Structure formats: C-alpha cells, structure tokens
Image 1: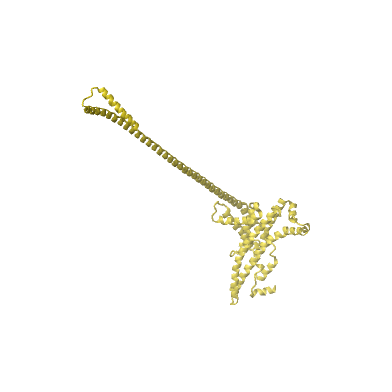
Image 2: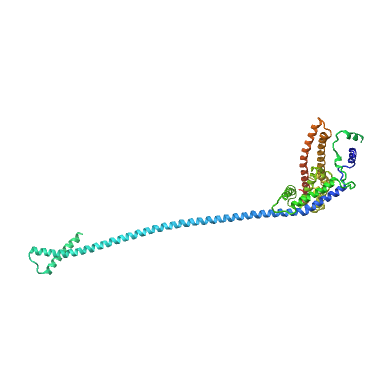
Amino acid sequence: MTIAAKLLAAEGSSPIMPHLYELVVGGFAFFAVLFVVGKILTPRIQKTLAERTEAIEGGIQKAQDAQAEAQALLAQYKEQLAEARHEASRLREEAREQGAQIKAELREEAQAEARRLIEAAHVQIEADRQQAFAQLRAELGRLSIDLAGRIVGESLEDEARQRRTVDRFLEELESSNAAVR
Amino acid sequence: MKALTVLAADEFKAPGLELFELPPIISGVTWFTKPVLLALLSSLVVVLFCWSAFGNPKLVPRGIQNVGEYGYMFVRDQVARPFLGKDADRWMGLLLSLFFMVWVWNLMGVIPFLQFPVASHIAFPIVLAGTVYLIKIYLGMKHQGPIGYFKNMMFPPGLPKGIYVLLAPIELLSNMIVAPFTHAVRLFANMFAGHIILAFFSAVGFWFLFEKLTPLGAPVGIVSVVMAIAMTGLELFIQFLQAFLFALLAAMYIGNSLHAEH
C-alpha cells in the first residue's frame, strides 16, 4: 500500500464521522465496565468506606470515653487525697488540743498533789509541834517543880496544888504566845 | 495525486490522517481493527483493576485497594461532590466507570507497541457522551417535569424579559446540541491532536536519525526525539486531565438535571 493510496483512503472517511462497528464495540465495552464497576464494585467499596468511617468514629468515641473515665477517676482521687489531708490536719489539731488538755490536767493534778503534800506536811508539823509542846509542857512542869523544890529546899506536899499552879502558868504563857503569833 | 506519489519517494512526509486509518487485524473481519481491540482491552483492564481493588474490600486497605480507593476518593471529592452534593454516592458508579474508562482509553496512546488513543476515534467518545446525554435528559424530565425541564433551561428566572428573546434559543441550542457535541469532541480532538503530535516528532526523529542521517539533519532529529519524550509527558498529563474533565462535565450535566439551575 503506497502512502498515496493511504492518503486517498484517509480522504475517503472524515475522522469526525463515527464507524458503526466502533459505536457498537464502544457501547459494549463501556456498558460492560459500567455493569461490573458501577453496579457491582462501587457499592462494595462504598459499603467498606462507610464501615471504615463507622469504625474510626467508634474508635474515637471509645477513646473519648476512656479519657472521660480517666478524668473522673483522677478527680475522685484528688478529692480523696484532699479529704485525707483534711482528715490528717483535723487529727493533728485534735491531738494538739488533747495534748494541751492533758498537760493542763497534769499540771493541775501536780499542783493539787503538791498542795496536798504541803497540807499534810503542815498537819504533820502541827501535830509534831503539839506533841512536842505537850511533852515539853510536862517536862517543863516537872523540871520547874523540881527546880522550885530545890530552890525552896523542900518538896511541896500538895502535888495537886502544885500541878494547878504550873498549868495556870503555862496557860498564861501559851495565851501570851498565841497573842504574839 | 501525481504530486503526492512523487513526493513520497524521497522527501519527508509528515504523518497525517492515515495514522487513524487502520486495517483490520484479521483480514476479512473488517470491524476488528486496532482501536476496537484496544477498546475491548481497555474494558478488560478497567474491570480487572477495579475487581482486584474493590472486589473484596477490606476495612484496612492493602496494596491495590489503596490505589483504587485513591481513584475513588479523587472522583468522589473532585468530581461528584462539588456538582451532586448529597446525591454524589448514587452516581459514583457511573462517574467512576467514565473516569477510569476514558483514562485507560487515553493511556493506550502512550503504552509502547499499543500506542493508539482509543478516544481518537470519535465513535468511542460519542458512546460515552451520548449515554450521559440520554441520562441528562431523562433525569431532567423526571425531576423537573417534561415542560418544566425546558422552561427552567430556556427561561431561568430573574432576568429582564427582553433578554429571553436572545437567551432562550441560545440556552436550548447550548444544552441540547452544543453541550453533548463538545463533550464528545473535546475528548476526541485532544486525543487526536496529541497522537498526531507524538507521531510527528517521532517521525521527524526517525527520518533524520535513521532514514536520512546527515550532519545537518542529525541535530534536528535529536531535538525531535527530545520533543517526542517531552510531549509524551505532556500527553500523559492531558490524558488524565481529559478523563477528569469528561467525568466532571458528566457530573455537571447530571447535577443540573437533578436540580434546576439558579
């Protein structure tokens, strides 16, 4: 086939005029694709894409839930911690108060004890003094009579009278003593 | 005629329309030509690709499903949703088929040894554009009523009355005749011209580097080969762009039929 002949053939049919058999084959080729790709495959991928969107949204939801839960837990822990701190400070305060109270009580007790001891000592001293005084009085009477007897040179016969005289003397002495005191 | 035969002998002859006149592959079966074979092959490629990508889709995509989903997302987000909004998913089957079909048809133009863009034979774009045209008219009449469809088309509301004298016939012509015609011819012409350009630079390179190698002609041949490579790159881009545009226009026509303009 020479080029000239080819050119002639080209001139014979315009490129803008469709061949009938190409229309038929083109139609078949396109509708086959449209059927398989458009009718069968596209719904499949659309379904998968929708499922994927759902799965991702579900995952995000799950993550958000977990985060919310964690935050709630954190808040709870914080609250518990604050409560514990508060409790501890309250206990400390209470202990301090109790300590102070105990200290005050102990001091009171000690003071009372001391007072009681002093009181007892006073009583004891008074008793001792009384006893010593009584002893001394008896001794003093005897010694005075003895002495007076020796001085007078004779023993006084009436002992009862003697005793009265001494007692009177001593009472005078005691009353003068008390007046001084 | 005589001049042509003389010229053919010894001088360079740029490739022309004869590029698109292909003899039957099996002599005697006149319909079984290279574009017919490639059209059938393209359908097979699209079906096989889509089947391996979407046949058994997984929630977590792997391998070819990723590639397929990339194409699906592209058509959905760039083509379907801007024009169809909430109706996008219902028309994804058609738009995805159109996009993949046209793109693979176009790619046949640069695949070594095949090297013939199917859409450069106008019958193939006509099939697609015609299908879209029929769907467009059917949907328009269904959703806007047979009279309402033409009324909305020719008499869009909100214009001064005098304008309609001009606008009505223009809109009718534009929607009913020009739109489907340009829809098909835009794709056809781009692929037709692209194929001629690639053939031209290849032929010049072959002529000056192999058939008539001369010191003066060799640089021309080299430039020509470089241009052929560069043009192949450009052609790859145009092939994708035209597939995108074809699906985009289809989505636009369908969208306009579903909802009256304005």
